[in-house]
Image (tube, rainbow, N blue to C red; front, side, top):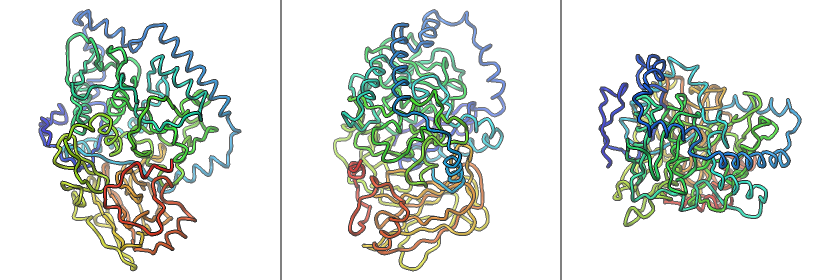
Length: 591
C-alpha cells in the first residue's frame, strides 16, 4: 500500500495525511474553498494584501505574466480564436435552434422531479474519505447557498467547453474533424498523441506562480496526492523558475487547463481561481492536464445522451460538438455517465431550469455532471494509458477490477467490492448492513439503516443480489423515499445507486430527492449491485423489495422500459453471472 503523511488532529487547518491507502474504498472529493472554518473569511479577504510584490522574484513575475495568456503568444491566441469562431459558425449551421417548446421543457422539468441517478466511486484511503465527508457536510450545512452556485465552476469559463485552453494545432484539428464529421469514428476520451503524454517513468514537476494562499496550495497538493495514490504517476513540487515540461498552478482565469503535456516541452498553466479550490474540481482540471477531454465529447456519445440543442445558450452551441481528432484513445473503456469529466444535465442552458443533456435511460440523469469523485473508469483509463506496463503480470481480478499499479499483488476494485481479487462485498460502514443475498421467486426486503427511522450521516451499505442461473434480479422501491439532493442542478448528494449492467465497473443509476421511484429495475445478468451512500446528512432513506424473475419476464419488461443502455448490456438468450472480469470492450462493442 502507499503510505501518506497525515495528521488527523490538524486536518481542518493543515490537511496533512498519515494513513495507508485502502484500494477498494470509494473516494469522496467534495471540499470547500478554505480548509479552516474560523479563518476562511479572513484568509479570503487577505489573499491579495498578503502578497508583497516587492518580495516576488523577477522570474516569478515573468511566470505570472505568461500565465495570463497560458503561455501562448498573441499570434497563437489569434489563431485559436479564429478556429473557434469557425467552429461556432459550423455549429450554428449544423444545429440551428428550434423554437422554444413549452411542452418539451415542461416534460423535462417533470422528469427532473423523479428519482433519478448520479455518479460513481474509486479507491483511496478510507479514513481520509470519512474525514472529508464529515468536513464537507459541515460546510454544506453552513454555506449551502454558495456551494450550490459552484457545483461546476468550470462551466463558466470563456474557453472551449468552458475550461479547455486549446493550442492552435488542437483547435485546427478539431475544426477539420468537425467539418468532416462522419469520415472517421474515433472513440475518444484521452489524447492519443504520445508527444502530449507525460512520461510515467519520471516525476511530473509542478509549481505555483504565487497566486494561491498556503491553504489553497495544500488543497491542490491533496488532489495531486490523490492522483498519485490511484495511478503509477508521481508528482514532485519545484519552487525554482519553471523550465521545461511542468504544470504551473495559477488563478488568472477561473478553472481552466490545456489538454495533455505541452508538445514543445514548455511549462503549461492550470488556472484554479478561489471558486475552483475544491478537490473534485482540481482533480478534473489536473485530468485535463494529464490528457483527458470531456466525456460527452466522445463520438459515441449519441448512444448514451441526447443533446437538447434548442435549450443551449446561443453562444454555447459549439461547446457540445463531438470532438474527433485522429490522435485520441479511450483505452477500451466504455462511455461513463459517472465520469468527473462529464457535463451536468443543465450545462450551458439558456435558462437555469432547462436540460441540455438527457440520458437515454431516464434513471441515469442524476449520474451525469458530478464533481465529487473520480469514477472508477476515470481511474481505470488513466492507468490503462500510463501504467499498463507497471506490473509484471495481470491478476485474475473479479467484478471489473484490475491489477493495482501501486501494489501489483492485489486488485483495485470498483465501489462495493473488496478483497485481494475483489471477491468480497464491501462491509457496511457506520451500520450493520449490506452483504451478499441469494434472491429467489419470493420477495426479499432491503432498507437503509434503521428504516423507517432516519439513517445517520456517513453510513454506507453495499448489497450484491444474486439470482439463480437463467434468472434476473428485479428491484422495486416502495414506501417513503428520501435522499438529499440538489434539485436545481439535478444532482444527488446522498443516493442509492443500482449497478445492473454486465460490468460492475460502470457507474450505476443514482436515486435521490423525494418521492418513491415508480419503475422496477432489472439486472442484465444474474447479479445486481446496490450501493447506499450518505455523505451529507441523515434522512428517511429507502425501502425496496427484490426477487428473481425468469428471462422471459425480463425481456417483456425491458421492452416496455429500458433500464440498461443497449451498449452496456450484452443481449444473451439467458443471463450469465457477471462475477468474472468482463472486459469493457465487450460492453461498448455496439457503440
